Image (tube, rainbow, N blue to C red; front, top):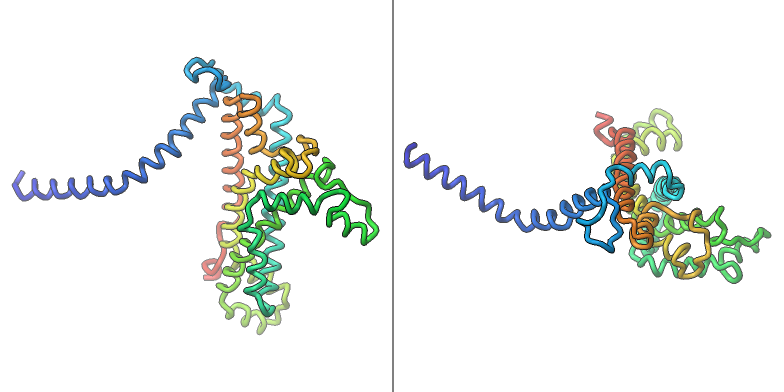
Length: 310
């Protein structure tokens, strides 16, 4: 090999090592805080470990934790059902409501102020939101029952009735997150070229036809983004449910089975029942459910926006 070729290889090796050196902080961060914890969780999911003995002394149980959760643990299946109701209800109902509000705000004066007002709950801590709505939902002096009384409807046990407790919390989740969704939809609506609406009007299309055949198809990338990120967040719902219906800043009296979701189930299984193996197995089952829902949404909304018209 000629001296020139050797020098070129040394220069290439030096540049490569320099690149990896700059990447090393990020690689170490993801290795320590992502790869190793995921690997440990997968390892623990195959063992019967209660955290009171060293992990190495725990018993290897193979797939028994997964089989137990899917076939014998009724509470886990209830948590899956409640989580599906919570995630689909808060995400898709919230998106429909936010789209309507975003379209309305494009046509009213002072839209910036109203967007600011709607965005305020997004930056409000969950504890404060729980305290506010816990007061509104109080059976005796709460505003919710006062409004029902004005229209001659019977008062409700919003956070204690197992039939409506989960839906009461879903309403809070939609209220607290709608501001961010409105902002994203507003950006999407402003990105639709007016030429499509002008052409539709020349063809005699009405408002509904414009919405169904222009607005919704052109917003598919926005809907896809909001659906995937919203579902991922909703599957991990924990704080509002824990504070309002289980831990109880205000009530704490609702039957746990009516509101338990997967994140809450995993918390109780790991840190109250000390069944860390089953909790880790449940976490990986939750990951598979989130992955399946995300894949379905990606398949349904895979094509849209300006590209779909070209």
